[in-house]
Amino acid sequence: MTLTLLPTHPIRGCAAAVRAQVAEVADVEPAYMAAADKAAALEDLARAEAQVAELRLRVLAVSDDVAAEHGARDAGAWLAHRTQAEPRAMRADLALARDLDRSHTLVAESMRSGAVSVAHARVITDAVDALPGHLGPDVVTSAEQTLVGYADQFRPSQLRRLGRRILDVVAPEVADAEDATVLTEQERRARERASLRLRRTGDGTTRITGLLPDQVADRLTTYLEAFTSPRRESAQARLDQQGCDRVPQHRAHAHAFAALLEHLDPAQLPHHGGDATTVMVTLTLDQLRTDLATAGLVDADLDSGPGLTADTARRLACTARIIPVVLGGDSAPLDLGRARRLFTPAQRRALRLRDRRCRAEGCTVPATWCEAHHRRPWADGGSTDLADGVLLCSHHHHRAHDPTYRTDTLPDGDLRFHRRQ
Image 1 (cartoon, rainbow, N blue to C red):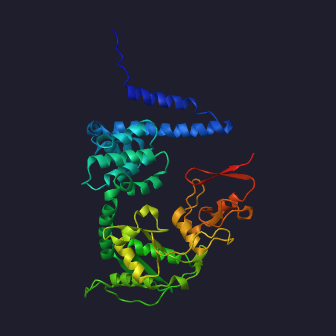
Image 2 (image 1 turned 90 degrees about the vertical axis):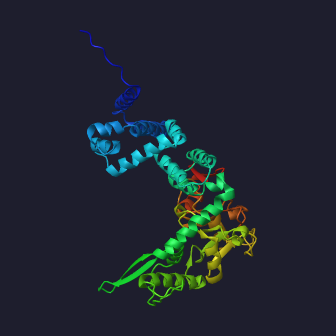
Image 3 (image 1 turned 60 degrees about the vertical axis):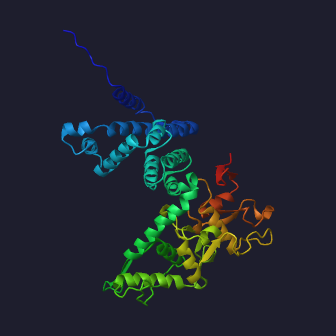
């Protein structure tokens, strides 16, 4: 009797080959590798990891028959049980697998080549799926292609921020109006859900529980960071800006707290980041004049997307002590040449607006905690102006002045440090 061996499926053979190859180097000690070999290996392994992940997701997307055969809810639940993985994480994998299989083939193809990681793929698919449904397929495809192209330049958190603004790139003619529509609804819901409760704990302290609109929370954070020992205000006011007679007390507290913040004078607050505590709102002259437009809040959490509507910015500019950074508006002089050794408060605000973070390559320290640095040392003829200034965190500012390191300027303006040989 002759037994006929069935050929192994190519994907099973690939999986076995990968495991076998990894097993061959299981006892190899990488500590003795040259630095160049380690660097190349790390990059190659990261790309291989993306390729293997795509293959696993490709199989997972079409494994409903596996779940049916074993009586599992779905293939993700079955695999979580078999591999002792977290069910939530496996459900997320299954959802991504189905997205890649059904509607995001470009992302899948990029993962297949190792150009897009799983984390990047989640960000791209989420960003594309979040686009308004009435946009045409050409815009959606262009957005996906653009984000895939950005994947090798930006980490997932940065790509997520770009994804929220992708219409600015692929459909700028509708981007601002779409953002304003979303923000208007978000601001309405935020005000309706606003809440601030104060409860005595009995030990001399009061517990505060609140839910505030994003722009209010951003302003609160900006002010509180200026204090090392914040003081608790005792005054409590009830305010109804919408003309309603019966407003719940916790909502009235929230509205009163927002009004209090809007009437604080930053000139009376401690200096922070080298100059008086300031909130800056940015918008162009066209945005200032347009009802359906957006504005940006400098130093706000960039992951939260656009800052606020132009309508809110106009209101704040009229009633609060903020600085509206308006193109074409009256502004303080910024470029002072060598007239001053130190950057002026107006220049530091402009550097915050431009750089947003420490400009050392890969550093994410926010601009609020950075220091102004002369690209060309002032003592060597450098100018105290915006073109020569750059924001660096304390660590990288020290490194920039460390003679044992060489500083290179990258094409995007970031600084890269190398230890001198």
